Amino acid sequence: QVQLVESGGGLVQPGGSRRLSCAASGFRFSSYAMRWYRQAPGKERELVAAIAAGGSTNYAESVKGRFTISRDNSKNTMYLQMNSLKPEDTAVYYCNAPALYYSGSFRPLWGQGTQVTVSS
Image 1: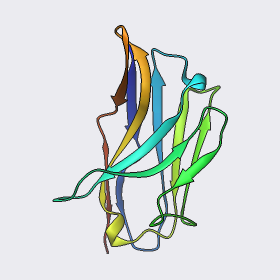
Image 2: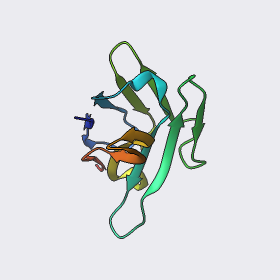
Image 3: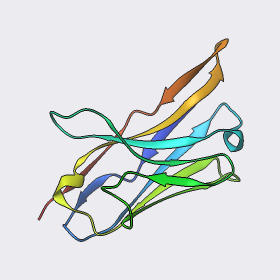
């Protein structure tokens, strides 16, 4: 069974740091690009960061220089290190495999999400 499970969310003060994890199972994790998205209340889901199978990365302008996406293929896990957090970073963060082959076709796979709240 293919699955993505996020962890690491919680309450953090402005200026603080948090590391999110995304554990993958049921597929060859090392072969696939992966992404982090987030969705704030009343807003559309937005792409935060992406990492290719080969390790190259891309970031939304709003998080460049503050967030770092990485992956450990030996652990089938992706990470999002978030530093200098701001209240506007408050959102549910989702792990995503954008084009995973399962159940006979290529389709996106989503985790259940983890809440990050930045507040004093």
